[in-house]
Length: 238
Image (cartoon, rainbow, N blue to C red; front, side, top):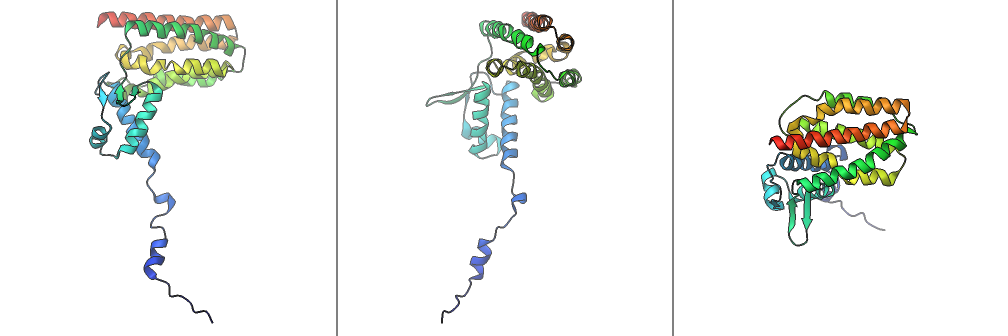
């Protein structure tokens, strides 16, 4: 007759999980916090344009392991805020110079009015666009990226919503890949462009409400042209 083997109490305890799934630290929280912290350092120029980033030093500074730093840098690379170079690691992306600034707006003024024109003939959530504009205009003023981060996000969502409504995934992707909002706010957030663009957004919404494709395209082009001229003027004052 087979005999029962004695159960090792220590082995039995070891087989049982010490904490439930709900009690485990959420890795995404640490990853997101690390990403936002490094982004803030870049946007506030505490990590200077062109500076080489030491992953190990940054991990020590933030008191985290290299893993969330590596994940954060990969996300920032996708956004164009850092650049990964073969055998050299990451460096902070340079600021836009005048030529790059002009090229960025040239592309925006080609793509975004056309996206707006197409959106005028389709179903557009005007309530969403109005809400985004009102929230952007009401973001409290403050210094540094922590203060204007919401303005960047709301402005980008406004333009992306119109690009999405165009019905052209390729056009939306082309606009998104310009990463215009992040680069422009990195340069010019002190000029107050977030609040002054609210009226221009309202004109675009009004044209969309009428459903006139030409009027919508003209309103978008005027918004971009005014933004361009305002930022050039701001640069001249520095």
